[in-house]
Image (cartoon, rainbow over all chains, first blue to last red; front, side):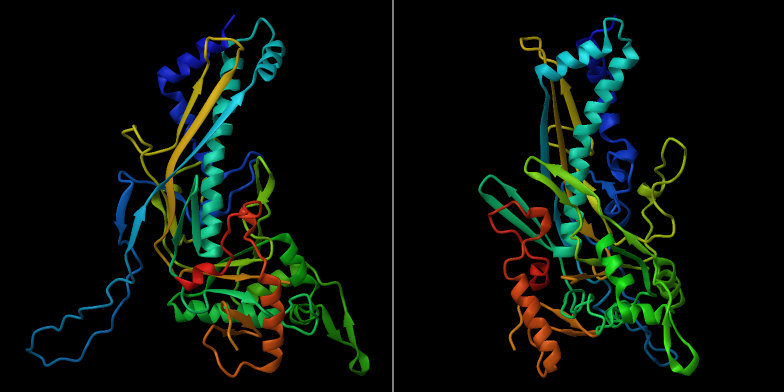
Length: 369
Length: 60
């Protein structure tokens, strides 16, 4: 019969816990295998340094000048890069305990003939749950950065706010009521298309919002008119057929817009369950064409890629080295102390921060009502 | 009209320095400003130490 303590010791010594902590699926999926959409917009990228200057920003193409045939070329001194951003990755950690009662239940469930594989599954499940606490933290920071334009790191009484650049019109609160049939939400959506064009992008590649906002859009009468749910009958009478997501989707497509993706995933904390992404917001990701090679190469057990190849990214989440470790990545430790009561302890650590390499490659509408 | 953040109304963006905001937009913005006064970003909803509102970053 295999002993849980010896399985854990084997895992620690073989380095398999590090592999579990950095499993590709943990980066992109939640505990119910639903996608973490932020991870496809700002995928993780491992970084050898925890502090560096990010200069890989979108280049501004500058127009050539008229010159004389034999005169030297004229250099354009400024405007080659939009900006640089000093990145200081921050630390997150989580500690969990499989207590004595849970431990007892586990042992009785497994019975006296528990195989090494059965016990290994338990250890992997526990380690993955701890690693997910870290990937959830990164996901929450992504949506804070995108929607609020800032990430607040709070350690004890010390608060550090990382503020990201915002262009005029990039993060706006919606003043008009999308729930009002007298108001046309599509005017606001078109304003984002114009903003994208102003910033030099071809258009909007993704629209991400909550199911609540999607329902508001489907239910809005002006949107129903736009999407063809009304038609002229005899004598000029308007007949309304049912407005639905299909009609809305067709209308968006015919206006060069993508299908709306809904994102309602939540994370748990000791005080309750909270959304990663604000329920009353819409995030528009522009067609940046910026691929993330590290993320594109990752695939699940069935060889299917986690990253949609067509989706551009607007940056990344830098994952650096945890204090005391030589290689970048998440670290998960599982311990089995020998003293009484029997228990399994787990700890996870990660050094990370979202970074935008396309600082104007997205727009946000908040306060939708 | 002093605004604490940027607003979109009928496809037009109005910021802290905008002038000549149409009356109906002013009314809508006032309503939203009122509702946002006590707004806390959902991720920090249980944190009483002062979480950022969705538009605080726009000041940076």
